Amino acid sequence: MVQEKLISETEQIHKYLRDLALKDSTGIIRPVKATTLGVKFRFGRTKFNEKPFGIQLVDISQYGLNKLKDYKELQIEVFGQDRRVSFKSDLLKVSKYGIWVSVPVEVSKSERRQRQRYLTNEDHLPFFDPGNWAVEPDDISAPPVFGLYKPLAAWTLVVDISFGGLCVETRFPSIVNWVESNPHFKESMVQLPMKKGFQVETELRWTKRIRERVVTEDGLTLSIQKYKFGMQFIEPSREFLQSLTEFLKVMQITENKG
Image (cartoon, rainbow, N blue to C red; front, side, top):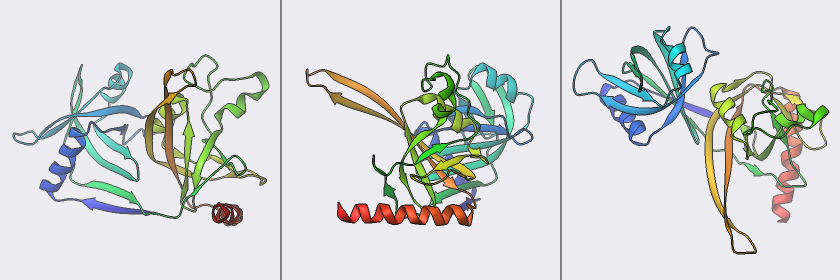
């Protein structure tokens, strides 16, 4: 369940945006009139001491800059674990370093209320498919593709799940980059163990990049990159919730035995 809070007081907005910039927060820019277009960015500088007030968004690809320059009103979305921030701004200036946008009138901050989440295991392992992601065979950052099994490459492991949503883990950054640019999925699929697959509308809530160090038996230290992202269920069907309830009961019994 998500709890939404609107920030409309000017000083609070300035402070919140300044904190996002100091943390090098990242997100997606979408033209209000072309929501299917998503451009990744990182917060740059903020200018609140002199007019015109503005926010700099940087690390935008040249392709993204070329697309954004044709639009005035932009939707800015920032994703973080257990929270999502969004606001609307006008495009003020485009430069080789990025863009400047106006300070929003209000900022929407959605925080996820904690539900009991169940860790999955090898014996009880669900899978998630975003639905519209097509794996390119020549993409080295995507899962490997094997002939007739290409559709299976889009399925990812679910590492924890609740009635509110699920968390996915992968070692392939391609799918993470794609879901960040396309955070709303109307045709995603959830496959629970020993159940039929369910089409469930989902929405991205957060992403996380994790670097782990592993020491081998030979004493070598290896660096392993993992990626996680959290998805919220949007108005799931009664049939899916019933099936999920049965699965979570099994998970609860497993946890209690452990």
